[in-house]
Length: 276
Length: 338
Image (cartoon, rainbow over all chains, first blue to last red; front, top):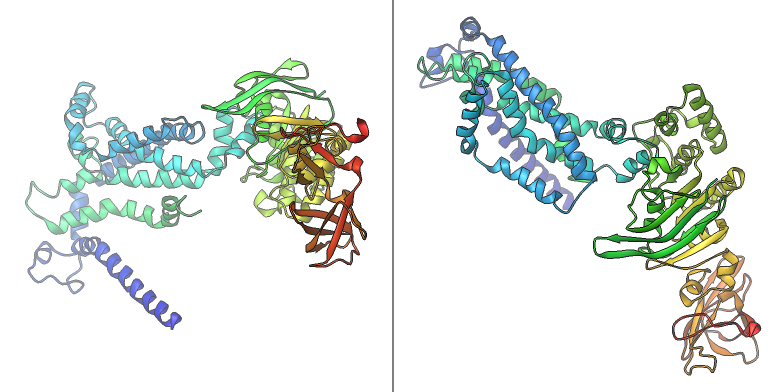
């Protein structure tokens, strides 16, 4: 009886998981399918899921009309650049919070996290004015700085969680063995925490790649990443769903591929420390 | 050289005083064991000697030099941790080489020292393995190897055998003792296991609640404990304490008799009772005897002791072996010394 009921609940949970996954994935699938339709089919009142005239016309149009690879390069520089600089700051910060704790470390961590709860629009005007005064508007450097700052609390938190899992005795042993603080971090801590650091890097590349609020406000043409490239298809020329979908598909494809190949690493990283 | 002197050393964690002002002289080349119950401060003191914990007040001298504020790596000490603390991403060879590389020792010399340590510790076949591929005993040997190659002035062991199973613990105990005999380097060894302390130490320091109750050779502590705490902590099974109904004229309020000092008599002894649980260990037998008005006494008998549960028994003890404690728990001079 116990086996019957457990296998029954397994079937129910599996179905439920597939249904939820399908619901989450459906908009992406729909966007992908629409990108292969003509504009007329894309706005049809009775849209077909697969039975339509497949075309690559939208992709050709988008590539002809927009400098896709410029936007792509901007996205790569902004997301990878901000994640790498973020790591350089977050690693020593997380090290000190994990291994040289004070009474206020927990408060500091909570304060850092609380900055993520503030709506970005709350700091829009000061940041915009600062960017204007320092000539950072529509520059990749400006966006790298903003992305680094907005994702830094998450990076510190994630690395702090990984570092806490590393026994302090290993670092103490390295100190006894004559390692300086930098040797302790580079030769002992980082190699042990490499899976966690890779997860942090991946997640932050994805977050920075997908960030649209700041990229739309602080860029125009020169530094616009793929999120701004998608947005450029949404308003001025009316609604061109098929081209918009093609642009979206081309914008999300690189990060989707990266996410797909690194999903094991990401899941491991995000659940690290949850179960000992 | 490897003499360490602690002068009025104390340690506070915030408001909590975990080490009370403490003096100790550790001689060059001796094997001293810090023993005591959990939370007594023995590991904290070892970490203070290592430099991993700051000293709140007092001085730590190593080879006559004040090392109180010297960083761990500069103290010339090597430490073996309870959890081995090996670098999991490095091979055994690189684990052992790590302190030498940090000291910028030439590569050829590193290789020679690794080979020598591997030979001493039987690690030759495992040099290219990662710690995760080794057993607990092998890991502990690697940790010791990493300590040996530095040729420290003293080794610090923080409960190094706690994670090993019983039989391996006995083997490693012997290996560490042999290592001490061959290296003749000062060793400070922390354990809560009094058997380890008794079998390995030249001298034992018994800790209790942040103070050292007594320092002495294993036999001194066994035969002449200064107080009831040391008497109860040293010896296995532990000493029997018999509370007296009336204070004796010398101030004794309690008698201490070790299980091995009881004699089982057929005629009327000093104490009479009934045999409870009998533990046969082959070479010896432990009888748990219920004595009216006293409680349970543990008695060590021969391996072939025929007594069993419920048997009546009479016990006596050699007066010279009975310890007497006053109401402060301090050992009174034995009758033989009076």
